[in-house]
Structures are given as C-alpha cells and as structure tokens.
Amino acid sequence: MVYALDAASGFARWTFEASGEIMGTPLVDGGRLYFMTTFNRVYAVDLKSGEWLWTHQRDIPPTFTVRGVASPVTDGRLIYACFSDGYVVALNPQDGKENWKNLLKIDERLADVDTTPVLDGDSIYVAAYDGALYRLKRENGEVVWKYDRGGSVSAPALSGDYLFVGTSAGFLAAVDKTSGQNVWSLDLRDKDKEHSLAGEPRRRLKVPSAPFASGGVVLTATSQGFLYAADARTGAVLWRYFPGNGVNGGFEVSGDRLFFVGNGASVFAFRLRERGGAS
Image 1 (cartoon, rainbow, N blue to C red):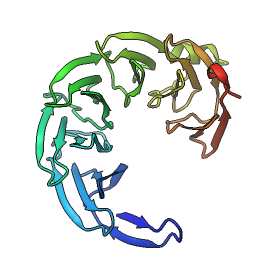
Image 2: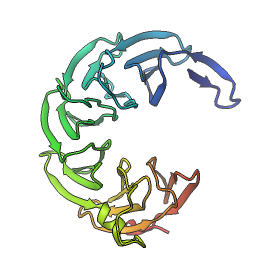
Image 3: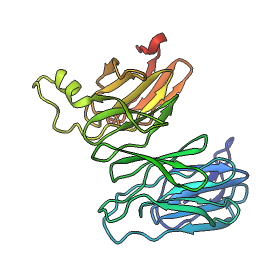
Image 4: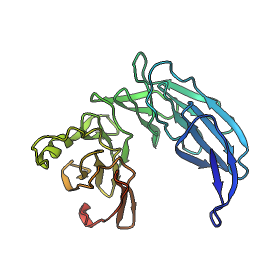
C-alpha cells in the first residue's frame, strides 16, 4: 500500500494498493509518484489523487533472486529503473514505455540489479549482484566500463571524481568514475582485527554498508563491526566508532551533525568537526 498523508494532520488523503511489497524510496517528479515492487513492477500514479497512470513490468527470473528493490530515479526526461532479471531500463514518464534497456549479466545465478542508479552528467552508475559496478551511457544504456573485484558490491556513493562501494569481501573501495580504475581500497577485515580482543577478524563481519560521502569523508560500517570514516582522496581512516551492534547504512548529514540508526535500535548523532573529525 502507498499512503498519501496530510502533512499537517496526518490523515490519509488517498491510498493505492499495488501488487507485491513496496520497497525502496518513492520518486516524486512532475506531479507524479513512481515506485517499484518486489514483483518487478514500476508504478506511476497521480500525486494529488492517487489515480493509477501506468505499470511497467518485467518477468521475475525463474532462478534464485535476492530480495530487494532498486528505487527509480529521473533526470527530468526519463525514468531509470533496475530489475532482478539483470536489466537496466529507461522509461518514458508519460506512458511507461521503454526508451532503451540493457541486460548487464547473463548465464549467472544471481543477475539482480537491486541498487538504485546514480546519475551523473551523461553517465549512469549501477551495481549488480554479479559483483560488478557498471558505468552506462545515459543515452542508450551502453556499458562504458565494468569494475569487478569479485563478490557483490553495494550501491555506489558519488563524490567528486570518485565512486565509493563496499564489497562482500570486506573492502571499502574508491573507483575513478571516468576510467573505472581502482584508486584505493581499505581492508575493513584488517581494521576489525586490529581492534578485536581475540586478535582476529570478527566472524560476522559481513558486507560493509553502502558508503556515504560528504565533505571529503566517506562513511561505512559493517553489520557487526565498527563505523569508519575515511579520507575520500586517500582512504586513510580518520576516526572509528563501535556502535555496539553494527550499522547497515542510512547516514544523513544536517548542518554539522551526522545521524544514523544502529542495528541495536538506537539513533546516533555525531557532531562533525572540521577536516572530517567527529565527536
């Protein structure tokens, strides 16, 4: 269900029932609301009335898929969406018809593209469960380069000339957005080992959260480990914090403060200092 609530009273103005779970972040653009469901569907509804406008659907793969949904994004001209069958698609916002589509991976057990695309100039950056980060041409979806370090990668964060991703191997990596070359990698397993009483990496380190980049600092955390702040240019660790139960992402900066939710159901607020420090 989608609920449109009156901001002042909290009462529902309209509701809309879709097929499949609604995950990710809805997109508002041009008086319309766009969102995706776990049934591989993109919906467009009228923002004021909740009236259905169109649905674009791709088949659900017969093979195993990862439970997740990428959020749609727009450049004001087209809607860009990613699907669990490995396709990235550009849609006409008026009728939901395909402008172009590109299959990023074939003959793989996990073809899902469940991360939200990042738009930058004439490029689109997407990460897939095949373990690769892709740069596509926005005009036709053609692959410009593919960054593949083995294992799955998180949704990318873009800041300046670099893209930042977390990998299932336990690394935070910086990638040059133009060439796709690796700039630096921070081994979070080694850092975890340094601060472990047992002197070994925590067995439940898991995949680093999707990075968050702001003010020359990159933040990431593991689901059972530390929160790290790294210098965006060099990868050097500026500071670290152990939140108790790990962090799965969802960082926000407002003014001089950083906010995030830990896995132990606690909300944290940090005061950011100059040069990327925190207290």
